[in-house]
Image (cartoon, rainbow, N blue to C red; front, side, top):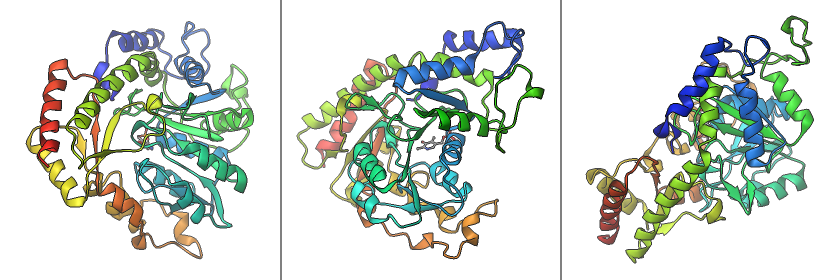
Length: 398
Ligand SMILES: *Cc1c(COP(=O)(O)O)cnc(C)c1O
């Protein structure tokens, strides 16, 4: 991760196809586009790659979440169970849909703890939105069981987990709908882009319509198309889809490289014999997309020290999420104050939750001990060896 590290002629060629035709729109212009359908081709290839029946490529991971929530009928006043460790986009999509995010604890998978999910279900709960954080799987089978039993919608946020799988089944194929992101720092990128996938034909049809002002996409002439519903514009352009198509075709080699880099680092850390370090619980090591190596230190102060020592030693791309205001709820002050440019429906509800009082001791306990290291594609063997030497040295000295 990320795919931009390996940009090359493949991306250029796909983009040139589009520029040559001058057709930047993903629909229609059948003659002018000379057979180039980049968004459509991407959708077919991604669906096939992960074993889903349908895929709709859209403008971002955040719009994918909005499309999925709307298509699954999750909206005004509904409670949606979310993890406190994610990118804020997950929460923004829920709030902007008029829903109430309800936080449940994570466990050592760094994803939602199924028992904690059960504990926060209320009569208003409509959906569970687990996030497969940092490239590996949530306890998705257990979460799916809970949703099935309670009649809840399951939407997976697989924005960081393309190509990851659990026991041979790809992440993004467990929920009614699932979301991917192809923003500039994800495993593969469109520049900006996202996707919803589903096995449900009706949900797919709703998603396609909702993402494009309700158009039914049946005819060549847009002027004659019907409008099934009111919607939005979450469309992707052919230029972005073209970049993504070249990137998608590199996914296998990206995963292979990440897995081999991660394995080398992890093995070196295990070989230090240090009892101070333990690793994120990964339910299926083979299915890990290996975008990150995450590990636990004994406590907050050791974790802070290690993060600092890594920085001083020039070991870059390491994240101590507990002190980082991007991915963990602790420092989401804008959320705690529900500060938005939009007048959020949640503020009008009879019982607006007070997010300042959010209390997730189990998640705090875990995230305060966690460091994640981004696994890059562009490391040379020599850079990897030097990195391993430095981090093994720092961990051995604890
Ligand atoms: C990146 C990301 C998103 C949002 O994707 P964008 O394409 O940047 O809108 C949502 N959820 C998670 C977990 C992400 O990492």
